[in-house]
Image 1 (spheres, rainbow, N blue to C red):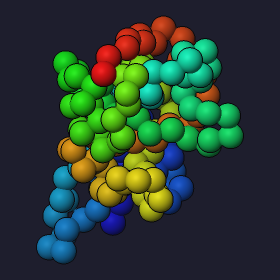
Image 2: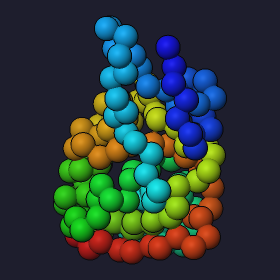
Image 3: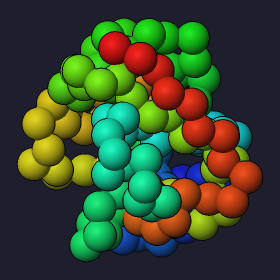
Image 4: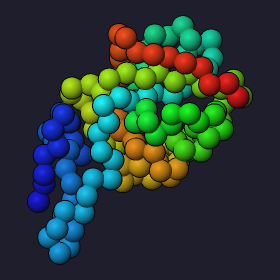
Length: 146
């Protein structure tokens, strides 16, 4: 059984809506990654990422994002641990922006290092993907030093 989650345009496996799996006893098991009102994209702080103006490199269909609240107040080492990404010797650029009204999905079956699935990172942060494109207008970008 699937339950629609408002605000999610693409769900798991292209079902058209996010789903909550039903437990064996037939009761909802809960949402592992509630959709936040503000998302964050984290990338290493490099000359390329400073100049790009996009969420990810050209050619990537989608990008990993997290709930901004899940990394708020963390230093660079803590961000890397929370998101299960490599530490960056130059720190991170963190762009925060309102959650898009469409295109949000919970990633599954990804070959990315550290990816475990289930809507959360190994460090416990909520995990989503959104379509790659320009950094959204009005986004706030800050640099968290190493």
